[in-house]
Length: 128
Length: 280
Image (cartoon, rainbow over the protein chains, first blue to last red):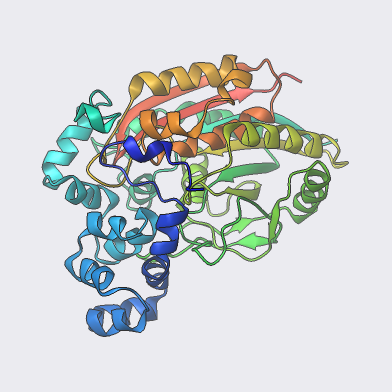
């Protein structure tokens, strides 16, 4: 029996469930490694070489090189793991979220300061 | 006898920790948020808890995907702040309370909650940001802390009901400990927020305010709320709010609300904070 996914109809949202966690295992474990200074340095000195150490798919590696966070999430990444990438790039959760929503940091911050993204029209895919 | 005298709920946004560490708490952006904790800072100095049972979630710091405990209790002597990718926060080491932690572990497991025991782990912003909010920047944290980590990163987290019932088991465990400890329980995380994908930035003030009210006045009913409601209404990361129910379950049915604070935004998140006094 397939897993019940009542959240599949939420727009713009990927729930990090069993299927995603399995698909993204090595991508996320690579991210975990960036909590160690020496691994961050290895990654920074040659990203491609360091990524090749990890048994990820080529699509996952490319998404990391592109810093395409939505794509990484689609391929099984989870934001708390991916945070090790953007934090070691000197970026904040706010900057990463702005990038994922396709606006500038200033636009994003302005939206948050005016109360954030409204749930109206954002609960179900059919509303979009 | 040990007793749980109060419950505290608070968000644990990492950017709050950065603001504290970089001395930005008076900045225009951050000042309104920190004002909301002024009452608490005064109150907690008077309350002098001996131990805080701190319910939080690890954010892929101590637990990656190699091990994913649903509920884990820190029984170690101390816990270092984690390096989350930009170096560890410059905050004191957290002193554990192994006597009480091991007692809780034994009591709660015999009460049908199979906690994972963790002796060695670093603690991330989920645990240290609430400490900074309540205690500021002391040389040493003024009390012992028992970390209680709940998985809310890999779906599914434990249900609200399970969290609420765990709170009740924690209460029984603390009540049966011989030493005369003043124990507080803190539930952290939330409120509405989503950090990922095109829907990032979701904030649902109306829902958050109802959550506050129901947590205080009708926790039994609130505990039955399914995950999908949190995810859809409060954002994918808003599901952290199940951890507030652990705190609430450890308190009496009737509590006195001492303080409530709500602020948008801290980075991507709606910040909620509550103090509930357990009338003993």
